Image 1 (cartoon, helix red, strand yellow):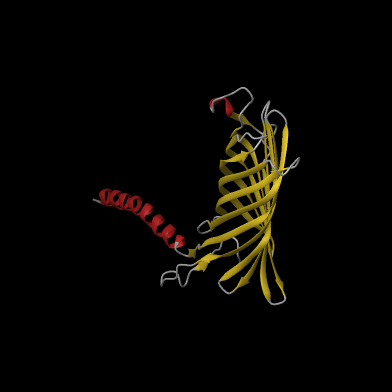
Image 2 (cartoon, one colour; image 1 turned 90 degrees about the vertical axis):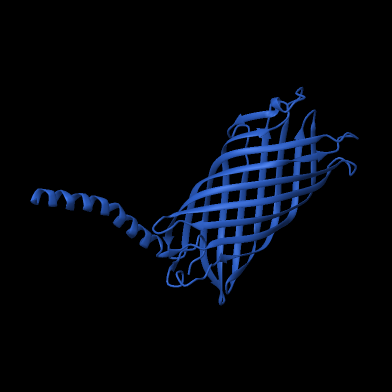
Length: 280
């Protein structure tokens, strides 16, 4: 009887262990609230691009984009942060040799980032990790009366890093941020001379044939629950194929709005707020 009771208690303990562990993890998970950081951005400035099919043609003109950003911190003690960025980019320019050659483009860009963050000073935080970037669209270039459309497609994997610093301008709290994204491995579309189908346009490469980079310097001026975003955005896109090169650079002023989307409820009222980028 004693042995049977001991076996029963042992089995009950083993069965209760995962339930207890789940309850503790559930309680721990509910101790923090991670709001969704969101931002709407408008970028306007100038851009220049050139492509070489038979010979180089260089264009310059205006650059405009509208984008959205979403970030969320990991639960509990996790130091990881997710980032989603979605953009529509438009360019319009003329050829450098004359004003008769026109060019315009429509590009759609999505980036997913996963970054580890750490506090290196009371008001300074560093984020670093990887991102996956997808881009698609086209450049419509007028070459001496012809109107070839250059299709762009890009899927890349690379590094991203961000520094975030909090300070005050008078009584106004400001969050300053610099982020750099640098793809390493990529597959992209760049039509080679002599190919008439899309199959011969695909290339798989690293930095030697594909050097893309994005730099963002942003300042969020806080007004209660929202922030006015001002800053600078720089895009560099470079595709090297054997007989066809393409290079693009833009410099844009950033104006937008940002903030943490809060879902207030009774169960969230007493939780610790864990923001992806702001401090409370």
